[in-house]
Image (cartoon, rainbow, N blue to C red; front, side, top):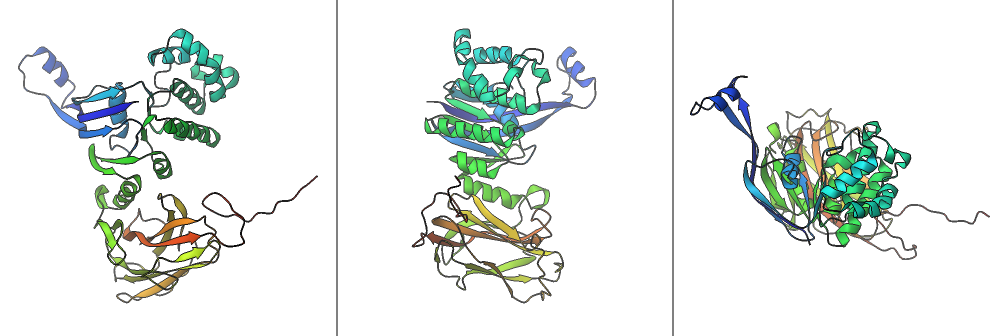
Length: 413
């Protein structure tokens, strides 16, 4: 089974002060250094165990794609090392490695051989590559005639046809259409169940939570956090609203001492959440039947600096894996909050008339911010502010999934 070991990995580039600096360093031995080192990655150190799936997250420019290039060997590290155990395949930048004037079939043969297969093995798997890519006669056309989606289809089909022990994927899958994305994730899940190791970069939190056992957050080329995907993504979300990329007042660990629920709380506290009550209580974990109503009461206090006309209250319901099930806010609802007196506690209520969720445990995140999103300015963001359980309802038909949809079945002919 495949495994990875990344030790003290770093990547730097030279920035020269003038156009002649590089030449002077080459031809004048002992000349003063004419460049400055710009580090895009530094002190990256982690292990990926056989069969483990690790997601790499972070803002644009954090170093995610550079890290994958170093792991794949398409870029040389400035320091540290990468040790790879097992056959590795990767899907990095769109079309990377394809020759634009070669046909898809020719590129598939070349890529397969670079991945360690013989020409005969590639030929034997070509029908499978063609069938999965679903690009029809374009397989025998030059790649330069392909759309970006067709390139992704062919690249993913080739990379996974060899059934690698380690699969490295950048954000290229985001280019594909919805149908093909479903096919890709189904294949990845199938290989994961068979023990494949996965290193995965994505801006899609749902994909990271579904596919990954761990998540690593990169910030300015450094590892900031490594742990459970739900926890790391909650922390990342908290950092998005901070000035210069730094979260303001992030609290970690138990954010509600009475109930001991773990999560993150962040914001500049120009307004704050005083309490979150489910069906009128802040001290219990309600157990509700499928389809029962739920009242989420949010008690808040704002100060004079916060404009009550742009003030927004939001809620988000997540399942036990951290997958977002439902979320809304008063901006989306075009709700009138009325006058909110500064310095005084004011209560608001979100009433869900039918909570048609599947059985299981759920958490409620509550946020106070300006306008439609906490990215503009976050006052108070509270993950896991409350939890509740959904139990099967007597008399309702069984179903599978996160939600129960109204359904009528009949015979038409």
